Image 1 (cartoon, rainbow, N blue to C red):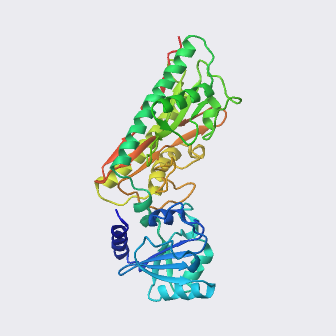
Image 2 (cartoon, rainbow, N blue to C red; image 1 turned 30 degrees about the vertical axis):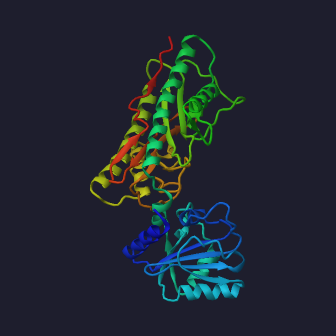
Length: 398
């Protein structure tokens, strides 16, 4: 989509939502989402305040400093140049003189901090023009979080690599225990990293292999010096993520659990089944809403999973959100499945990907997290990627 098509698309949204326009503000790349939407090069100097006004109808207006009057040259619209703060104040009032309600990268009460990046002073400046400011959260997603066909394929390839990698990790652990050879969490981590490299994939951080009480720490990370040995009878959690080593590739992100035994304990089975029920409930809600062509927001998915865990008496042990958006970064910029850490009211939209990963973490014992990815295509078809773990992996150690 070229910039003219993008602006036409944005204006259609503004009309549908009865917004007068979108005020896109940046100062020294403080608004990276806006920089992405406007297609501003990484080499472009942005050392002065800039505004790009996209009205509901008509031509956009650029407000730029005379020192950097070229920064929006690639964008359509008229240009207003300023040097002094008084000129800037006058320019903003001139641009917004007919506006009543505008969108900006703002979130009431900082409910969604990922998009609440315009500082309070700029919001004051706009409001002093007699304008109400609402969040651009949903509008932003269409231009920062959606995936094209090539990116969707890259995600599917990454998810396939992850499934094969974790299968290889279980086999590695099993073979070492059968031969009574020492294997540590760190060894499994390094195996996964080498596997990613062999498959032409990269990762932003090293994967996690966590044994017993370490699995009860959602962000435990083994290292060469702080790594537990994996022994027969241990409970094991493996969390891994990667993407193809090429431009614009999209991550996959999954978590699996297993035991180095013929079968898990009754307590391990019980916790696993609760987490699985929470995962499946959240996924079914997403599928149902899209099949009915109804809006669904990130917080609702989190609530669906959390309600299941809380109903079983383990709510206090589910200590993170249910899922996160996935894109070129493991944690993308779109809607998160969150009614816990934040209240994410952003709509889940087609051509986006996100994780569903509820967990129960029992300090001093073990933790269960079941994670797969959910891909919503252009037609609103909901697809689980990365595989669905239906039972605790049992390793043969004899």
